[in-house]
Image (spheres, rainbow, N blue to C red):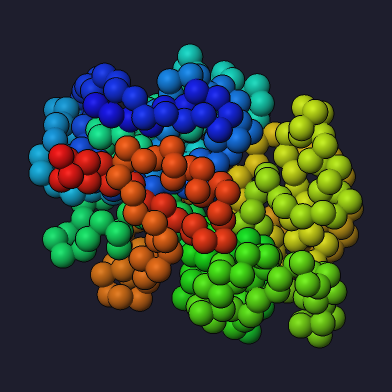
Length: 396
């Protein structure tokens, strides 16, 4: 089959690799019909995430048709399914608490030690996201093996095309959980840093969960226009000092909740971010945490901090004093995708959630390397790239 493979910083290639096979009874093989490039994939593209091996297949946002199942799978050949990026067994201590992104069994024992050393406990398994998360082949390919297929995938009813449901695999549940972590109360004002895909879905989710005002912070004009079209007030951080602007917009109190939808690769020319950039370039640090510092400093006393943005290592200059003295609550983590699939699918079916507005480019899978470069270099114009493996066959 054809698949996108990683070979180093800014070096991803379409190659012919072995087809996946059933390994365990609960496996299924999915023929990919749509897959997407995620902002988190850019962390791999930029080589910020360790333990990638040359030839690893990328991609964790995908859906497709069931073509083969093991005896322990509850899927049926021919079903259309969306597959969560988190791989979860459904039976461990954490899965029983619906904390699927903390599953104890999906990261193989020979891989789990690496993340246990870094983070204190082993990470759960995930598709196409380094050997820290199990080394599983991803879905930017023609086919993929899905472990624990009786737990993860959700069957899509006829009449809902791929573009409407593809983002159930990651970014829609991630935005919903980010909003849920804000614990929105009547009358709340929430500020969201980053109007990429997760930030935009967070804004959409915040309004559905009852937020009174949402303030979106970014510097890309098109992204800010998208946020504005959803009802958010917008701040271009190139034009104003964000903390001062938020204080003025909230009567000096600050937002009730704040969301860091940016993560480890913050942009900007503030002193702390320039210093972080130097440290990450010289391998003296891992993450650029300017936005995380700013959300903590901007949030009102007694407020809530939600962090869906991905961080991978350690950070300095962290405002721990502000976090403690202001009495802030912090909630973060990878998304418990399986928990949110059915209610979000129902909202899509009812027309209350639209996801298609986000797609700016649709490309054949074979053009995935070009898609990565576009997404990296043209973030104002390229909001989301969807790859279609079938397009090459139709063109042949």
